[in-house]
Length: 375
Image (tube, rainbow, N blue to C red; front, side):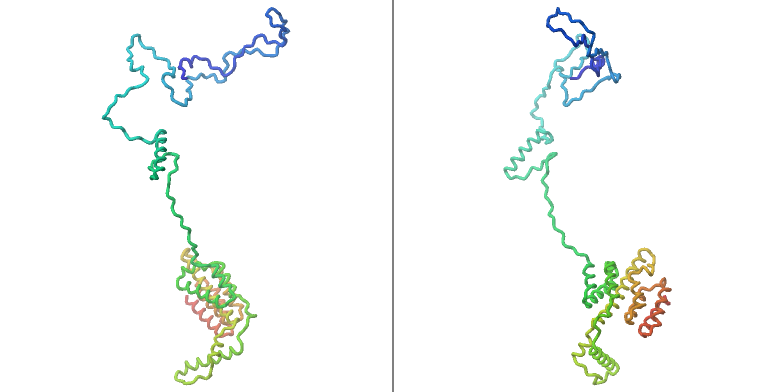
């Protein structure tokens, strides 16, 4: 109930209890009559409290707004009426609790607005009828109702493999079959030469680690070519040289059978390992060149000589490998990646190889040094 402002202003506000205790006693009388007199011994076990208008916050509120859960009708508001002059005319309509709207038959009835609770109850009934008739839903939804949606079809992704399977490549490079190693190195080299951008995935630690292992393989325990193989090769080479020099000759110096030709073309395990060392050095050089060009293109800086991938293996091969053919392959690998910025260190290495007793290695080093000085 809403109280008037005057009553709230003039009403005393208490926030404690007004207690007034009269004649507290411990020993009461033993009878119920009023004529008996009990002597007061003057001992009290209660406190006489008389509190007059106590307050913690003495500020007086002008109006305390009530918290209502629903609107209050005018009849229950208990608002103080405004005094009117005597004889003030008041129409009877003002005291009416409801209004009567005249009926207009021509008036258009607006379409129902499905936003109220009653409308929601009605639409639930409508949807129930539609469900019985197997009709499509009317499409009218309300807050809190879960709409029916069509889920997209989920297609499982395909097993997409990378363009370069590094695991397979390293497995081929680490194979015990020398031909498998050679074919894999040939594929890497051709890719790097034809399209350097496609060779970037090969420039990873695992690939270079496998190539270095091939170049450093100890082949001393492998089977060398037999004497029969060497003899067959000598005959075959002599016939080839004679045929090129004497094109009109009707007979060759050596008669060689098909079996001897097949034996001459058979490569012993030791020879296969040494051949793959040369392939590994050249493959590392091609990949290193792709790496160096990419860094220079992106940063404008030349890769330091010691930071070139695989360069330490090239230098160690040139210095310590006993096979002159493999040393010559190391010189060719260094010549492929040489730059004027590496001139000092490469000049020292080429000069070392140029003094070797093997003429093929010395000639290879001389050509590389000449090319370096022209850069």
